[in-house]
Image (cartoon, rainbow, N blue to C red; front, top):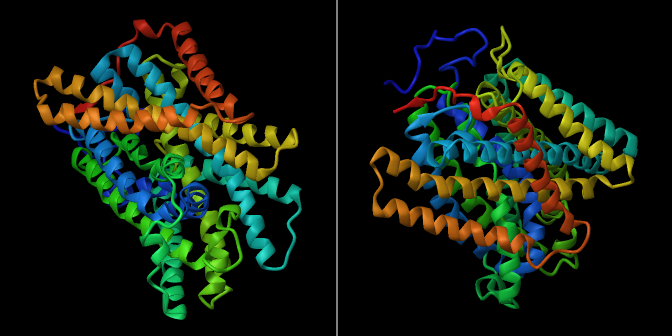
Length: 466
């Protein structure tokens, strides 16, 4: 059976087939990872724990994600579906595992969108302050709402528009940040930092806490798996897109962490206490106005991440609806745009209500960002565990299981299992200790809804096997 439908085969109410190119798959992968925003947010957080060992942590992180990609590509090289991890878990462990994995991934992506929305407002206000303007809180909140509306519009119009937009944003943002790092080295003549190479002052406990945060940096790469039905040569393009992004972006985190930590040394500023480290890097490089360009790029990076996660979440829900795990109307694509428009609208509404509700109760935008990021991080790791567990069972059903598949699954399961346990035990202080229960309750509520809809009696939608 071929891995794609003919180019013009698009039944009424279905997603458009063979319309996403390899470059657009790369854009979806990189956009959902939001490396520009991640570099800004995670380097200070990791440094707060790991100190001079920050750069080194990205070596095992990149290796761990490469192993994880191997497990995910067990599925993506053999089957293509909008259901993504829901389909993967079902193929390996059965329908109920697929149902729970589907709700886990949908909740993860929706919380990620809800995290990116206030991030857009927060970093836009930072750009305004660099321009000498003070943005009122009401304006920042309006930007949150406006960014969700813009993402909804782009996602509804078509996947190609979305991915091209994400690619342009990340190229602009990452290019500026890399140029800034090079300018710093050229301007100061500093390139060797003995304290970082000697791991001065680094403690094992700090490295343990730091690596948990470092693992959050590369989440989102797997969102391209939701484009299985729409991609050209999906069984080859999607695995290549995943591998083409993980290692380069992981190495970029390593290099940029090294440069940023070196730049802050002796500055009198505390890297661990800033959410805009590249502002100082621009000053240290002798190009302070470039910080404005970087700030705009970071703001747009979070918008790109919001758009990518919205695309992915909507397709997961679309696939679940076609399997009878959600209301059937959400499994019908837009008649002209061939996008899951109802699911996109639902994700947008939920993702907008969550941060606005927090703001209404007096929570600051940066705290809203942090809560959303923690919820999404818990979900991403939980979702990855489903893939690690399911992969060997899927291969055994196909008669393709080999010893190295088991080793790959076990090693990935150990790495991400430890990361999940370490993120919730010992229990963090309030309100962080409540967030795991919020996420688990969301997944349980979704699963209960599907059960109430009689999901056990419905067949799974047809995938595209190799």
